[in-house]
Length: 343
Ligand SMILES: Nc1ncnc2c1ncn2[C@@H]1O[C@H](COP(=O)(O)OP(=O)(O)OP(=O)(O)O)[C@@H](O)[C@H]1O
Ligand SMILES: [Mg+2]
Image (tube, rainbow, N blue to C red; front, side, top):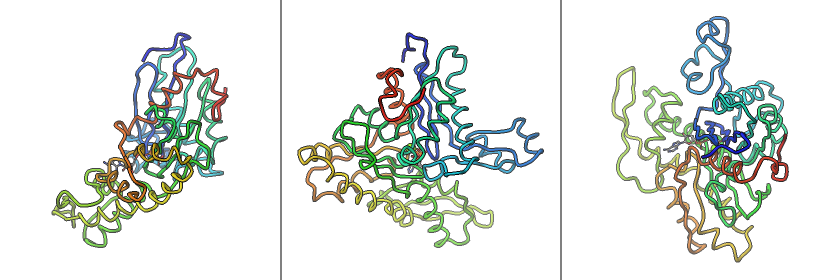
């Protein structure tokens, strides 16, 4: 993408619960886990060689660090200075990477979980305005819709780590009643899967990270393609364990709430727009990769007639790319007229 003639660098940022993605008008792309680590003590500072670490580096050195996930459950916890600071540092880090070497103005649009865009507006805007010359904070499903160039008559289901955000797009910046946030996302599946494996195979040693890896490789709903067998360790020794039923059950556990909210949002479209909306149900976010999910959602809505549920092609960067696209098509001078902006 070409740089703006004014010499202004534009950024699109997706500040997610589990991952933060940034893209720039110069073609820069980067994604990191949304975690900041601060050394526990003086030895930690010595080991790290600095006073904070981000993303995978923070996770790898976690024994020496106190870790902060600034957007737990999709929002900055009210009154938590540490969460606020961690969100600030994380954004400063990604803006710094994307704008390295750039002399002129830097403006950016930040997509945040729908719940944060409703509850944490002021906080997020304060952070954004300290880091960028012009900033706009918008809800993440809207950014995904913008990426798809589908601003009306569609429903975006963004299955993230902390939350599932469902948003009915009606040709305007979505109103609060057009968005729903469910707190059962990928992290909830991991928690349930860990418990289910522990119950069936109490001897097996598990960590949450290991469970997440298993899920990311094998997640499915509906009829299995074949048995799911993974290598796990018990007493330090590896062995094969069969997890088909457990995986299916925990992955399917997020579906009924999603379907229920969909039926409510569908009713909110004008009747003549409902078929178009039903033809454009779009799954986004990391959880959209759960195999069999589009078919299961479509099947649950079969009473509504024709349904088309599709999965977005680039769930990692769609939100950030949508934000960049909006930033490019709508110059920063106009941002105070959309959603909430700061300059
Ligand atoms: N192949 C996969 N199958 C199932 N789940 C997956 C897969 N790949 C990633 N995930 C899950 O998707 C979630 C991360 O998705 P995403 O990056 O969209 O979240 P986020 O934007 O950081 O979170 P949120 O939208 O809640 O703020 C994690 O729970 C991750 O384990
Ligand atoms: Mg997200």
